[in-house]
Image (cartoon, rainbow, N blue to C red; front, side, top):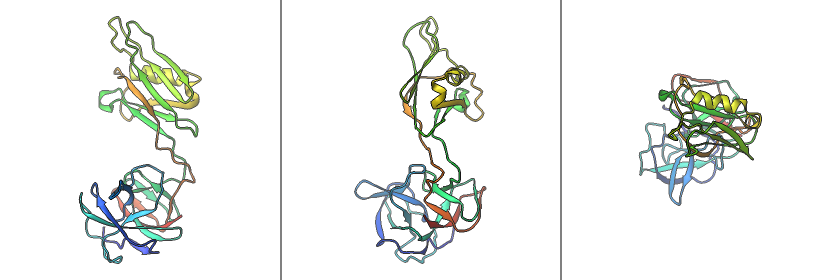
Length: 248
């Protein structure tokens, strides 16, 4: 990637902090503690429009990345400023596409709303489940080991919490498979107001699930919760690529 990071609009005075992880110039950033900086880590959400620069010279071409412990130069940008961000792998955007934080320093298209989700289990173990929020709320899900023998699979709802008490055998060992949990959640009228459940990726759902502590679904992005517009069309389906953007 050999593009000028800053295009127009100097934002506030250039700032510098210490990299807590590797950072590529052009990444969207967030502050860590009193002196640290890292790639922006929350999908969709944004507090400050901070982008990593290459050096003190704002027109220096990008030629590498910051390592942990390096001093990172960055600017805070404002509405109308233009900067080269980085589209995450898999993005193919048209000019004027709405972009938001992908949760890892990269940008992604958000022309449509993205629902909150929660992934449990392991795909390779065939017990992986993805719970998807069905409304604007961000509910929570827990898979409970009842700690008793011969229990039935029971789904209940308390406020925004979907509780799945798993079935057990005569020795108190959990017997509920991912498929059974998915069907129970999707068939429960109260739970299905809040979430839907499905196999994750190639997981078959045939294997027994494990207990999961109460965890909130996350990652929701409203259709208008964007931070910038793509200035030109960019196809990043095969590799993460620079994209000139205009800050919202």
